[in-house]
Image (cartoon, rainbow, N blue to C red):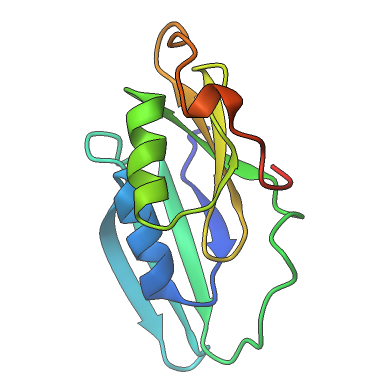
Length: 138
């Protein structure tokens, strides 16, 4: 067997793509299905195209219930503090800051949790992250 992708439903594809672009993922391909009234958009991190995220946008949806029933996606990052700072500066919600220099959770525009894990050993605790409270469920 081979892992192909994880699918998440999204309300605003362009806003969600902007979020994943901030994380470092890029769009690989897009398919519009007029008859089924949906769009599929596949994204992946450069150099890791086998691990894809499929964004499914149902054109007539009226909103999804929360996103917490999904669980989360997880990505390893080179510097968790720099990644979280870049995301926060762009308006992304940091649900669980990287207080321990190892793990953080952020939220997509549709409230789906994304776990960020520091590559290698945890970084030393640093401000403002070390004293920042969590802003909600993760």
